[in-house]
Image (cartoon, rainbow, N blue to C red; front, top):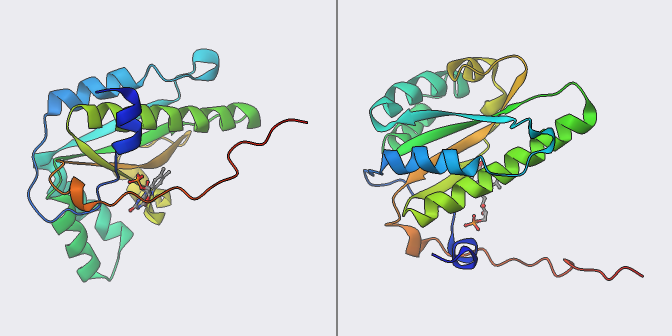
Length: 182
Ligand SMILES: Cc1cc2nc3c(=O)[nH]c(=O)nc-3n(C[C@H](O)[C@H](O)[C@H](O)COP(=O)(O)O)c2cc1C
């Protein structure tokens, strides 16, 4: 697949209504290859926690208890969606007490994440990058083993591409991309 096609055609898959299965070896390889992303000082400020298919239910029960306490319906709909996924990746960034380095680390993780989404798409694996409010919940962080000097940046839901056609492209409207320097 041409890089240009992958950039143009990759979509965030947001329907999780059927049971999905993915090639786990391809996911592991994509994570390794995504780490060729640029990163200042070669700090490589990223790591992931991979949740395989058979652990999704356990993980959902644990985190939705913290994310939606006293909301059993939300817990159940989280469980129903997440257990249909092919797998799940928690994306973790290494923090840095220095302002500039912290900023660079955050940007580098974004580059890593986009590499990962494109590499997975090339392998026929769909994705949706999720940043729910509960990534900041200390108990959710703890569930994924996030250390005090790390930030839980988000989750990548791993799907098949059966729903891809139904995911209409959100056309980009920003027409101010390029201003000539005067
Ligand atoms: C940093 C980041 C966080 C996102 N968080 C969420 C999220 O919490 N929930 C969600 O449904 N989509 C999330 N998305 C996906 C975007 O909504 C999606 O990329 C956007 O709608 C454009 O669609 P496309 O990826 O198919 O081009 C996130 C994307 C990015 C880059």
